[in-house]
Image (cartoon, rainbow, N blue to C red; front, side, top):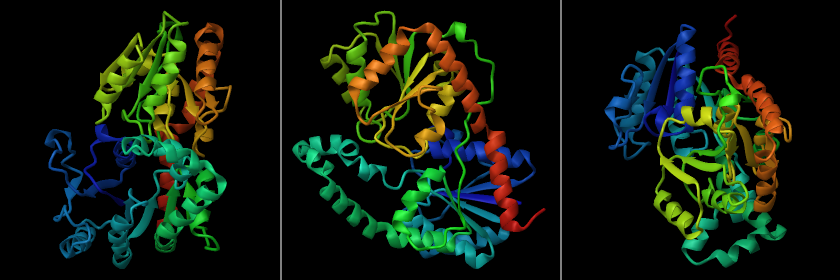
Length: 397
């Protein structure tokens, strides 16, 4: 089969989770004898050295996705490359999805992927928008959004804004792929009374190959990997959590791997809080950090999946996360292979960390369970789910 991924930006694996997952899937599909191409927008800052030139192609108009020249180019591209399956990696985007629908006119099967929670940014509104509200001196309004009647009002407005898009996405796509069965209830919120036989769930695969992990070599390190920010990722909460645990655990350190516009701000905040044994490593390949660390800290308001949790678990790093989005329970079995914390309790998070930081035998037990759980997200397992989907769409045996 000939498979085409479309996305807003170039598929550069180091840029983000969707790009990394796309690349892992593409490598797997090619290993099974399929041809894979990318057709995307282009950013002026894209490093040509990071682009897979055999796969990567660009729309002619990067400023207007729905320009006529993009539609014309797209149709010719599909025909010339004999594309069988189109995977829209921006299923949440009404604009790119409108372009993707053109595939149906070209006898190409359309798979639309939704890579995030549809509602968690609203259900966790006061956390997700905390930094933005404080920036404009509107922090006082956040507690009001937690009142049931206010939250229902926000959800009503949000539903009206996007219901037409998700209804159309489900009607036109041959398959809509969510990251978790748990997200089907969120899609129901937008597309009630619509047949959803074409809606399935396939988790993201881990990016790293399976390796033997020596738990004896683990260091007393807490690790964060991801974009460094205060809205969705809430790294500011991680600093507050560390403030509660570092004094009583003098042989432990916190390592933050990642970059973002707010990195200087958070470095300064760490100084203001007088935090010790905290390192901001910037953007780095996280593999060695996973090998070294013992505990992994996620403090996000919401996620689509949280593949960094699985990557950490693969290397025996015990994950901690707020139970703030539905798919996190697919990854972490609370108190077995990781720990789920009540949103957004800094006290409970700190207490749970202290419990593990002071109990080596428990750490070893949970680490082994984490490694075992990570196995179900291997590319071989996840990749086969995709191949099964393709065969069903094309009626292949």
